[in-house]
Image (tube, rainbow, N blue to C red; front, side):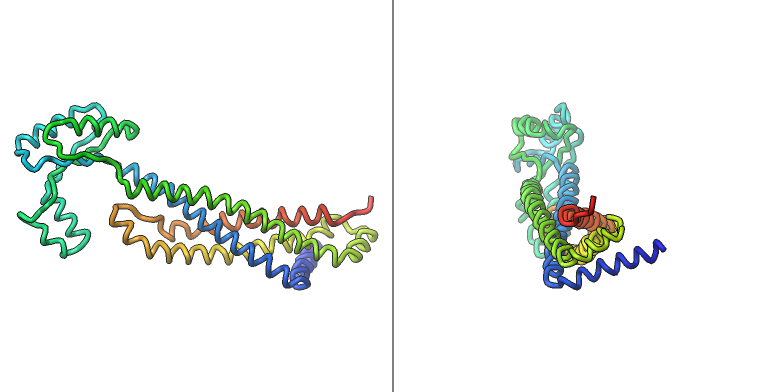
Length: 297
């Protein structure tokens, strides 16, 4: 009996969608757009976390040695750097090694930089114990003899991190407004369904139908539309993310960074999107049912 009752309520929920096809289609479209936006925002958030971790791993001081420095001067400079309190490790990298890395990364076009034509400097790559004190450590290194230049961090990654964080804040604001608009449109769609069946609802209440039996088709309608929209949105978002990261991944890897891979988001992203969408659909249905259906006292 309960099984039959649920099937009947589910069928009525689908009938409500067909009765107001235009508003249902508009609601569905808005859900897809809003949930696609949410999915991409979530993907952006995962990448910000990933970039932060990668940035912490890649933060190092790069100290370039004067061209005139002898082997003895370089050894002396390395010892002076190692004595600094915040220094964790010091790795020497010759200009020959640097050119070799450039050729491996960018191709044979840079082989012309080998030998006497090498314009690079010998350098030290310095890892620090406390990143918050990296600026002070870099200043102390700059003051040492035979240092041509010293800098730290990765400005490209830092700028990328600031930009993505700004986008995320702005994106969450737009998502909040989109969610409110989605709730409103779904509420109007459900309200129209309730109003068109007002006489039938009143008759059912007089015959003793329970509030759950009357309201369930409209709750099913809101949840079903939200589920359908979020499934479509998840597919669109994952395809868009794969396409965008495919365009930008190669350039980002040149700086030693990478995006979160699509396979890592394949399960988590749809689950979060569908869960959020179902909550929005349920809220819309609850508001519509509680404000438009009057039960006899």
